[in-house]
Image (cartoon, rainbow over all chains, first blue to last red; front, side, top):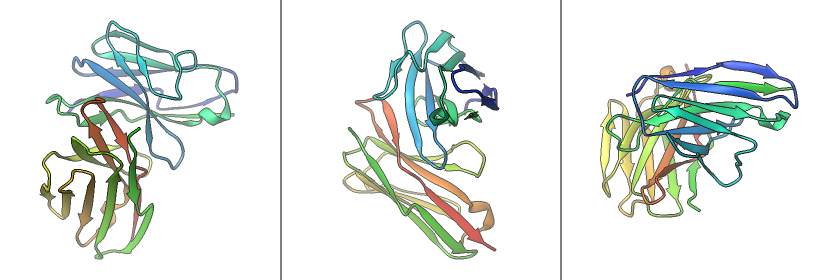
Amino acid sequence: SAVISQKPSRDICQRGTSLTIQCQVDSQVTMMFWYRQQPGQSLTLIATANQGSEATYESGFVIDKFPISRPNLTFSTLTVSNMSPEDSSIYLCSVWGRANTGELFFGEGSRLTVL
Amino acid sequence: GQQVMQIPQYQHVQEGEDFTTYCNSSTTLSNIQWYKQRPGGHPVFLIQLVKSGEVKKQKRLTFQFGEAKKNSSLHITATQTTDVGTYFCAGINTNAGKSTFGDGTTLTVKP
């Protein structure tokens, strides 16, 4: 398994502001994944962050709204830009296990409330 | 795109009763995974099934992967209050290189 630290764990934000979420992994990983979990809903993949290249975004998510950085093999950030109440969600960072067989390990999540 | 459907959405059981959640994919899967999310927590990996018809057990939990690799189930025998949470399946299509999560089944257990 991997140990993933995410911060902030929660925040209350004002409409129109931006917030950056940080994700730190205890080992080097090729890919890091950012998920969104809206209240009472399932997990939706926002993007895959690869070190040294631009993130790959899923349908419905764009770089201007969710810019991602991946400066090294253990760290990534996700910014939620120009927030609206619809962005109130849990944002989760995840990585594959060390065996690289596809199982995902998640950080504890960042619970954002936008007023 | 790939869709993964999960039923039921909610299940309320008396402690000691059994529980089953079912997962169906619109496409053939390479693998399927199961996760558990406790209330207020994050998803935790339980198991991965790879082979057609595979059955795996973890104590009171039994996981099955369908012969056609398009469906799966998780069965809990004699539920306990510690089993409460939301159980998600995730279908893996290695061609796409990513996981698609089902909507989850939320289990509540009445003592």
